Length: 106
Image 1 (tube, rainbow, N blue to C red):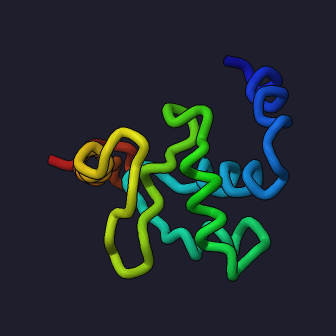
Image 2: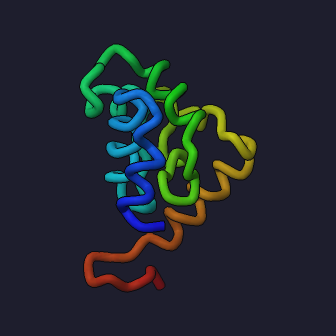
């Protein structure tokens, strides 16, 4: 899907949702952030629950990596395909993270 098609597909969603998804796309593979962090970066620091709602309505989970968002207490939170899969994705990404030279860890 091209960026133009993706943008037009997202235009039907509320502005805050779009901001949350854009912020989420900025999180590097192998890293995690809290719902609170996402909400703050999306312009509404006290709207972590709303950020979670936006992520639960992610229309492109393969493109918008909503699994990288967890609760600030470290709990993984929910995931549309189940908590176990979210945990597996996070572990896989962490283990396959490239080093500063662009190499997989030994």
